[in-house]
Length: 88
Image (cartoon, rainbow, N blue to C red; front, top):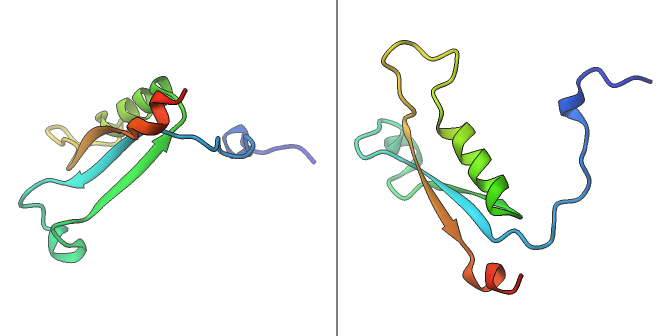
């Protein structure tokens, strides 16, 4: 059986150590805060700084389907688990 979409291929298990992350939060005054709460955040973890920076650039870019004047409505922050990253 052939693969219809290469991006759907599984790339193996995630690395055990993923010390580099991106914290995603809502901007102050965002209407979704009423639904998700003021303390909502999502963390995405990566094995290398390069992976994290590539993902951050993709998450925070202006997408091709955005309207003129639209900007990402989320805040992105680089985070790091120091104990894990120093052990490498």
